[in-house]
Length: 300
Image (cartoon, rainbow, N blue to C red; front, side):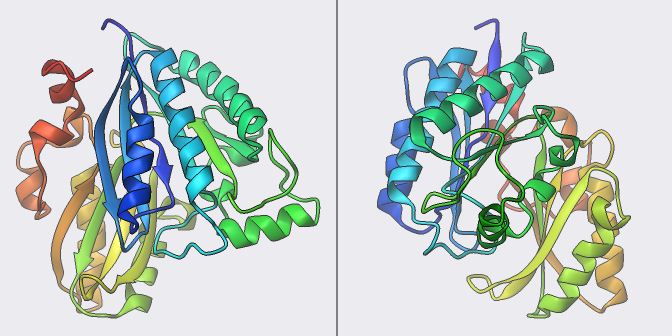
C-alpha cells in the first residue's frame, strides 16, 4: 500500500473483557489492520492503533466508536486517565505517502460524520482544530466528562459538531497530529501528591518541558505511583530528556524510579541508541511496537 494513514482511537474501557473484545472486533474492517490494542485496568482505557487507507481507517474508527457508544456509560466510568467520552479520542496521523493537511481534512469530515451518525458531541483538536484554544487536547478535555458536561449545560465550551449536551456517551475529541509517544514512569511508594508535583513541574503547560503533557497518580494494581506522559513531538522533547527530568525531580523528593514503559506504537526515530537501557524500559517489543517494523513486515 503506497498511502498509509494511522488512526489511534482511545476508548474509556480497560476492565470489561467482553466490551474490549467487542470494540477491537468492530475496528477490524476490510483494508484496515489493527496493529495494536492494549487495555489498561488502572487507566480504565483501551488504546488501539489502526493502519490502512484513508477510507479504511475512517470506517474502522467509525465502527469502533459506534460499539463504544453502545457499550460504555460515562456516568459509571472511573479510571486514572483523563477522559470525556466513551470513544474518547480519535486522532488521525500521516504514516506514508499522506500529508498532514490530508489528515486534517479527514479528521474534520470524520468528526462531522461521527456527530451526525451517532449523535455524539465532537471537538476538533490539534492540527484539525477550528478554534485556537482547542489545539491542545488537555484544554479540550479540561474538567473531564463531569466538568465538560457542566460547562456545556451552561452554554459554554459547545462542541464543533453534534448536540449541545453531554449524555451517557460523553463527547469525542477528533484530531490530526504527528505520532506521539505515550511514556510512563513508575516510582516506588504511594506518595501520590509527590508525583502530581513532578508532573506539574515537567509538563509544558506549567512551564516545564516543551511538547510534554504529564499527570501523576497512584496505581493500585502495581502498588506504586506513576508519572504518565505524552511526548507530543519527540523531536522537541524525547524519551531520554523526559526521563532525566522526572528522575531529577524524583531524586529531589527521595523517590526511586522502578521502571518505565512505552504504551502503543512509536516511530523508530523516537528511540536512540542506548535509550531503552538508560530509561529502564520494560516490556517493550520493537517488532510489535515500532511503526516502521510493522509496515516492513507487511502488516499495513
